[in-house]
Length: 370
Ligand code: SF4
Image (tube, rainbow, N blue to C red):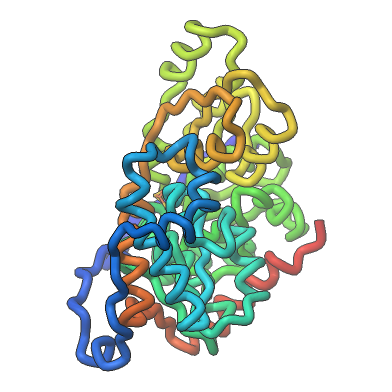
C-alpha cells in the first residue's frame, strides 16, 4: 500500500530538534588514565608477523601486502589486550576488513549483533560500529561496560528523530502502534512498541495485527515495507545519508554496460534504486544471497566496506562497488580500538529509566517468532 504522507519535525512545530550524536570527543580523562594499561609495542617484528599470519590469509584479497606491517602490530596488541581486559569486540559489516576479520570476535548486521550481545560472557563489550549500536548493547547488557572507540560515530537516521518526536506522533495518531528501526537512539526505543531491523521489518509490522502502523525513522525502509504489506504505514522523514545517494540512473548505466550483471540493494535505498535491483534485502540477506547464488558479477548497492568483507570471503566473485562510505562507521579505526582497551574509553551510558523501557522494545523484536 503506497504511503500517502511522510511526517517530520516541522509537522509538529517542534522547535527543539535535538541531535543525538556528534558530540565533541573528550580528551582522555583522569579516571581513564588511572585505569590505563601500558601502551604495547607497535613494531613490526617476526613475532607479530607469525601471530597475525592466519589473519592476513583472510584479508589478503582486499588488503595489499605492503599495508599489513602497519596494521598487524595494532591487531596483535588489540587481540592481546582483549584477553587481559576480558573484553569482546563486536563489529558491524560496514567496518573495514582489518577490523572485521582482524580483531572482531562477532561480526554481523544490527540484528545479528543485537542477538549475539545477549550471549556474551565477557565483562567489557567494545562496539565497532556506530553509537546507537553501542547503546543497544548497553540496553541489553546493563551490567557490562560498553565502550565505543569514538563516540562521534553517529548515524543520520538516529539523529533524525527524538523521543519527544515519538510522543508527538502518538498524540497525532492515538492508539496506532509504533515500530522503530534499530537505527535510533535509546530515548526513541524507550517510546515505541517494538523495534525492527531491515531483515525483519515486514514481519514486525505484520506481527502487530493493526491495519495502520507508524514506522520510523527511515522513509525509504518504510516505503519498501509498504510495498510488501497491506498494512497502512505512517512514515517519518529520516534517511540514511549513505544509501540515499545511490540513484536508479547509476544502476541503469551498470546494467547497460553489462546486461548480465546482478544488482543487489539495501532497502534503505530510494525506490528508484530498489526498482532497478534484482534482489533487495538487509545486509545479512545480501550476503546470504551472494553466497547462495554465486553470480559472476554483482553490483552491491550498500556501504563500501561490506563489499570488501564479502570479497575477502569470496575471492572469485567480481564485485562492482558503487562505493559510498559511511563517514560515521569510518571513525572507528585500529588505533582508536587500541585506545579503548588501554584506557577503557569511551564508555557508553544510558539512563536506567530509559534502559528498562528501551529493552522491552528491543527484546520484543528479538523474541518475535519467525
Ligand atoms: S550507513 Fe547509514 S544507516 Fe548505517 S550508520 Fe551510516 S548513516 Fe547510519
